[in-house]
Length: 122
Image (cartoon, rainbow, N blue to C red; front, side):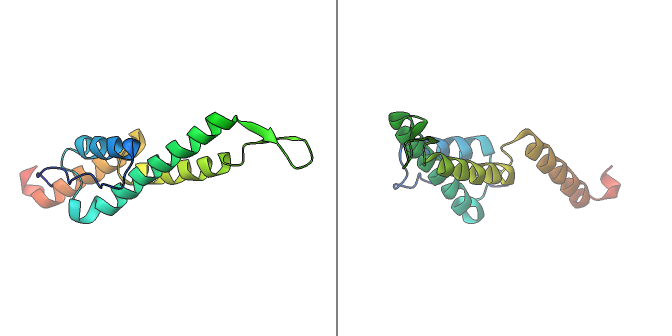
């Protein structure tokens, strides 16, 4: 378990990404290591920044637009919002940011503690 301070917020992150960075490291309570988890958490924050930009554009333009033949179509950026959110969900599962993932990771951690402690400790 890592017990040091959270790593410095990467300067290239925008406001949303910076907030997410602080929240993830704070919520992790030492569960994440700067050496092994920094890149994954950076990617997670970058994806939040991307989602924020995409949703700002969709909000500005509206959920629908006129297609090439005059038909109403979904905003083209919505497919990128969807793929970004899919990547976010995958990372959230990996880092334990869903109830199911926390339960699974908690069970794994409890099992690891049993093995490390040895049967004589129980």
